[in-house]
Picture 1 (cartoon, each protein chain N blue to C red):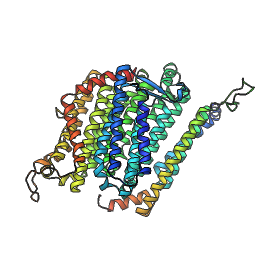
Picture 2 (picture 1 turned 135 degrees about the vertical axis):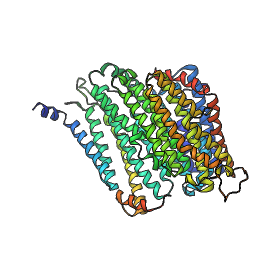
Picture 3 (picture 1 turned 90 degrees about the vertical axis):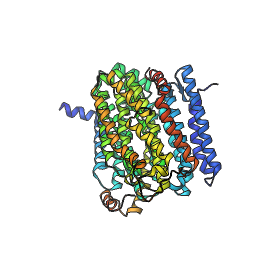
Picture 4 (picture 1 turned 180 degrees about the vertical axis):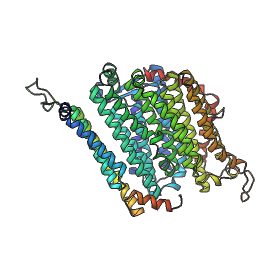
Length: 125
Length: 495
């Protein structure tokens, strides 16, 4: 019972860890290149979730200092950092997708195993 | 002259020239070549001045927009990061000088200008990581570095390059994500991203959260291990480094992986602190992985037929030496590891460039078909021989000195078992480097004319080779020129 309560209290951290593992599993086990990119995106999301939930303060307000100066504020820094993280994630995804288009043009398939078979038939360039 | 702004000027110079070149010029002509080399000339002078300034005035920090270190981004310019910047800028200047002729054979002519944009952004990111004193800022530069280093591989439009680049990208991103997870875990404990602040807080609280810190370091080291190609995580490296255009291989193998090694040193010594790292056994594990890399990288290299692939596997082994130096966690060990960063940058750049010259001239990558090539390309093969003998550890060449310093450091730290690993790794190096040298100079090839002729290669390719070969020998005979400086600057790095 204590364990369950502990888990429920930190459900955001548990969620981030679970998402991280799901993403890692997708990247490592699926042979489809697009699914690998999706797995990378899931992993990135998990880190973003983790980072943002560090800064969250229960019952906190948005960090705008008004009349109510005693209020508890949420830490804004992690959220701002994650904005940068999202931009980086988008550019990586865009680049990975453009590479996938090239690979599909050259090999005619998106499956890593099939690509490796095609490659092993070719002489080493 | 006031030099505190020079690090920023170096970085902006690379960014501005890199981005504006394809905008203002349409063709890759002599003007562009002079512009590129001129940028490097200015950057070398500026980084040398920065280094001299640090030597004279001591390390300093640079705050962007005058925000305090708790709020803003900070650069820490200490003796070693200034020296490493000088190395990065000068070795990449040599490589780019080589690439001016070579690149037209490797890359489509419409892509040449974009190639230099990517290379300059790559150098910008490397200098950024070296100076940065802020964990998240390091992450951002790391992402720029991984995107650009994939870019200089995939710019060569071949099947192999796209696949190598994709694999590199996926593993690099895995590494970046783990690194960011580590940052998040550290931020959870400390509430800061600035390295100095994190270190102050960790010294007080680490006993309360040992698991958290251990987990953070584990994630960060996995990430950096992937990017720096530590043994079990090196799978992307052979494809990426061997299929890339020659100048890219030299940059990637000679400089890019070193920056990650330096980041790892930063995390052990500046972020976590050396006492806590030792208490949590982080450094001991690092030495085990280093020993594994040194042996396994060489064993894989023995079986290779492709010359660039062999050099790529040899990099895995050499990275192990640097990690060993860092993992010893003594001042001299760190100095020896850093010395190997310099010696490997010179030797590996020389090896890749001379291999590239052979490919440029003969279009031959197979190491079993290089019989008698020493008669046709004496200068190229002499440089190759010097650097290869340096890798093996023949006295008089810089590689011997870094092995010697590492051996002394290992004995000083009282872990004499690693001496055997260093010796074994040197023997394995000899197994795969010596046959090439022997077949190039001693074996006969009936079809070749056996008169000595000078290499008929462009002079801009010859100068970089000779420069690198000369510096390997110069620092091999006078290692104190470099080692004294490194030993002086290591304490400023540790502070």
